[in-house]
Length: 137
View: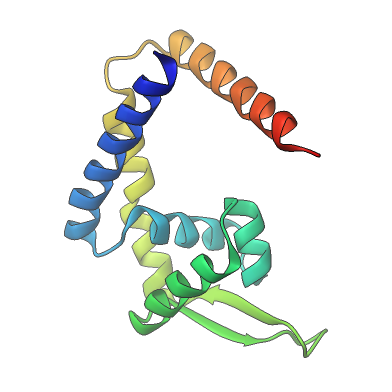
């Protein structure tokens, strides 16, 4: 029952993100990268993948699209020339201000008591920990 509900919620969240993203020009995945870079500029592709818990090739694909859209730039790290760091452009910083993740969170939590929401978040955090523990060798 729980997995079924979470699957339904995930599908609805993706549909809402796709609809909202079409208006703002960002998919949820790309908006997550923009939001992350707005708080932690100068990350590498591998660091982004680790923070978002996705594969490096997935991040690479999204970075390519964001770079083509003029939302970010990649440059050699001044301390370690082997690394490529990713930063938002002014256009990318403005795109983050449009707030696709925030818009979705507002829609998702509308009408939910803040105390109930804190409980939900605590339970979800525990579920994440449980699954991470189950996946460790």
